[in-house]
Amino acid sequence: MIRPSHGPDDSSFALSWAAVTDAAARVDGYAPLNEQATLDVAAGRRTPLLLRDGEAIGDPVVGALVLGAGELDLVVHPDVRRNGHATAALTELFGDPAYAADVPDGLTAWAHGDHPAARALAQRFGFDAVRRLLQLELTLDAAAPPASAVATTTEAAVTAADGIVITAFDSDTDADAWIALNARTFATHPEQGGITAADLADRMDEDWFDAGDFLVARHGAALVGYNWLKIEPGAAEGEVYVVGVSPEWSGHGLGRRLMTAGLERLRLRGVTSATLYVEGDNVPAVRLYHSLGFTDRAVDVQYRRRTR
Image (cartoon, rainbow, N blue to C red):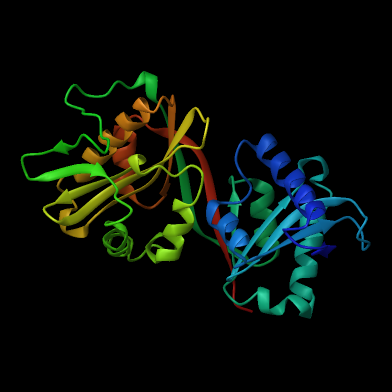
């Protein structure tokens, strides 16, 4: 049964939630919820719920669910998978009028890992695959930087003959320009292009944020590209969080230069591997990353429910 129990600020709820999500991450090798879902829950934009094996509050917790904003995230505890809990939860979700506002036409859901069970569940409940997000990885100690690579910090910059300078993001002066650049760069992207000042502030408040890991390419006074890196405290793995190039500079090799600077920055920070996510149909970007030595690691699939 789907049960809100208390709320995300309640200690019992938080412990039960963490027991499910931490176990799933440990067994599956990746987090069961993406970053946006986690931020939305923390900000109160979406609703976290627990799945219980029964109708009473004290019945065992078997999974977790996030609803709201036209999206659905569902994870079942690894110890009780293949027992019909996901099917039961979705049957209740789509059949109970109390949840009608949370399951609109076009509801989307992510399957982290392209598992046959997720595909079967999606088909049963009328979902079609609409996006494939590839996760790629690179072992940094096996990919030496080119001799021309220069460390990128707030004190040092990479300057090219065309006037491009790569420096660190300045949170006091670059925020508005970056939001505008990001919106232009990802004008057709379902999520990235819609990042607002509040979304940026949320990420800058995270304990992993370091302005020195947020590289921006400048041409004169204009921002024309960026490579935002993410390193969790104490982690040996860094993420190429998002790379963007102004449409006016597309095709001039700026993406490769930003990637080169970013990978060198990760090496200087002491991480030994890098990961990134890229849309499966973004052929030029996938080709670029493969040419830099990245290999395929995992696939996430987004599903959309057919209109009834």
